[in-house]
Length: 167
Image (cartoon, helix red, strand yellow):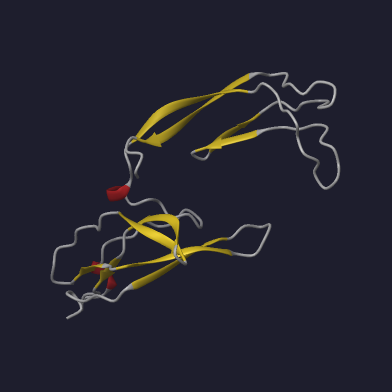
């Protein structure tokens, strides 16, 4: 019976960025929660799935997997999926974490002992800070060799972070 012995879901995680080819980070397996068409629907809970790259730990995947039987009446009676905003799907309400506002204060003092970049000395560096999808930039150091300190020392920005840090 499918409800008692659902198929295993195999997950592979890759780091895919513009600078290099996709790099394998690890894999894991999951057993999906089975939702039969004659049962009332309750959303699945998020779980942590340990990732492994060979025998090495590769972190954890926080996810929920559901195997939902399509009723004879068709897909219209299936649980609704929020429409994407372009290519971004909204986080379902039942797993959206409770957020609190925080202010991140950054003291930009200076830079020291920067390495050469592509055999060239660094002359006008700038720092980019990002947290929870928001960010700021430091002032540009006009001449790193003559004065390696920032001209604007303090900046702040507000972020919303989950109250439960495990989500």
